[in-house]
Amino acid sequence: MAMFENLSERLAASLKKISGKASLSESNIEETLRAVRMALLEADVALPVVKSFVEQVRLRALGQEVKSSLNPGQQFLKIVQAELVAVMGEENQSLDLAAQPPAVILVAGLQGAGKTTSVAKLARYLQERDKKKVMLVSADVYRPAAITQLQVLAADVGALFHPSAASEKPERIVAGALQAAKTQFADVLIIDTAGRLHVDDQLMAEIISIHAVAKPVETLFVIDAMIGQDAVVTAQAFDRALPLTGVILTKVDGDARGGAALSVRQVTGKPIKFIGVGEKTDALEPFYPERIASRILGMGDMLSLIEEVERKVDKKKAQKLANKVARGKGFDLEDLRDQLRQMQDMGGMSGLMDKLPGMGNMAQMAQQSNVTSQFGRMEVIIDSMTAAERRNPDILNGSRKRRITLGSGTSIQDLNRLLKQHKQMGKMMKKMKGKGMQNMMRGLSGMGAPGGGLPPGGMPKF
Image (cartoon, rainbow, N blue to C red; front, side, top):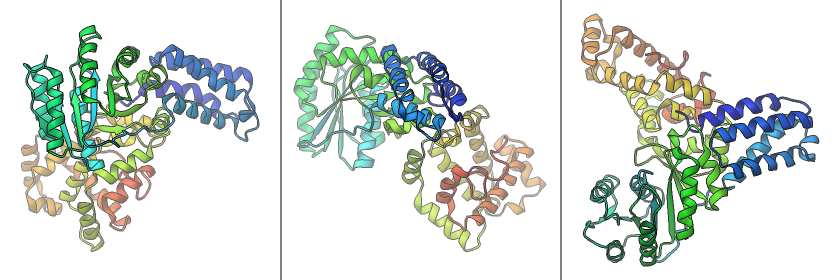
């Protein structure tokens, strides 16, 4: 499911009629605004947010801004985008960690929102991007499994972990962790707190008490995007008890509606600082309202894609491949396997297309045809070959092909398709003068064009 898919589709349909018009009348503006209002309500956006959003767009659309424009339809679209950005908070609000180390981050939220996983994701993010030394501690004494879960995740992301036990008082755990963080020269201490199925007095009293001991510079509330407006109401309740500094919106990749993302800022007054876009520990992105507005309106998010490529593409491998192709050495099946793995690291084909301008529908097609699992199948076929076969596919005769398909549980047609795809990619690599994966990724925006991200013939049809 693409992020905010339903909202994107509904908004696209309501804005399509108006975007190409050379002149706009009050009646077609009102008609479009009615459709936009319905799209937002169906996306579970909070009613006060819908009302003020539509009113702001109306005021600007009926004013001189559109009438005096050379392209009124496009200008109207620009207004919708600008107001979406305004609703979500104008710009990314980064964490304020300018404090005497350890800077303390307190993480709160209801059970099942993805709080503990978000703590680990945040630790990884701060270590990899900001080069911080991070310590984690769990103050959830009601769910012993939560302490173990955080310990496992801390080891997974390479963060320090301060042990705690269900028999201890949360306040004592936090005081001990603060001391340990100082002793071990941690830059940041992240505290995971207990979640409940609903807001109750005991939970609030406890978290207020933990906050008093921890004196955090950031108090982040974790919200499950899938539960829409209910999540926003819960955030309000927490904000009355705690001075929240921001929100982490989780499970955004599974949220086809987008109601929580559009409602949080205006209803709670708190910025969304991060969004969780998957289950892996690297699936945490800073929340950029402008980029999200672009994605919602089907305009893509090239900046995030470029950042992701810079971060996740193995530059040594890319350079090695570039040099190899430049020297006239062929693009072999081991190289193809590397490319497939790097694509998978970036969320597969649908994850990439979701960020490309005008490619929202293609992202859905990629998911429906399950391209990611097809890439997996291609990898299995390559893994079933010998090193010599991977380096020189021309030696693949009938008996070798039968052995490979039996070993990989695929058919001769699957193998032949893979070989054809590989040949096409090899030709494309030559055209790109051997710039390898980096050019291939940059070329994604010219899908299907020479030097574009997919070989002629588009996606593999497995």
